[in-house]
Image (cartoon, rainbow, N blue to C red; front, side, top):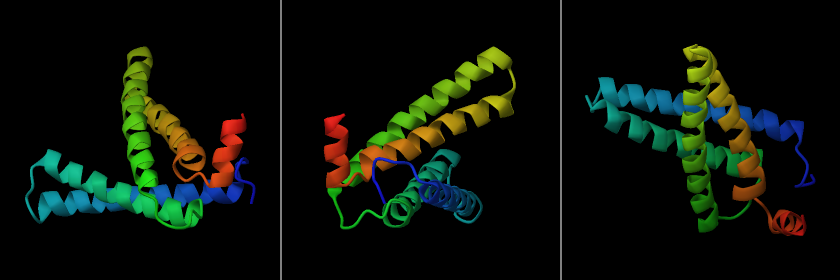
Length: 138
């Protein structure tokens, strides 16, 4: 499969992986709050980390079929998610200021960050040596 093209298979797998990460995030959050009686910020922080870890593994191994372990991938993944979390919050705030409809602003922010996360993982986080050479040539 060509690394510099976006394939339907990758998009579908990314959505499944993302859904799995969100479900993990939600379940861990609920367990933290209801079973262990953690403070909300701690429960959410732990659940987000668990969901992110699930997303990393699924997207690395299944979605983008990146072989081997590279510390750089973990760093790039964390950097990408930090950046897209900020963008998500800014888009949410901006759209909310424009239209004052919470669900619409939430969906816009989620859509933007989902697209950025897909592109970032494909071309930045899990890039192969061949993909990295292609990116450098552009």
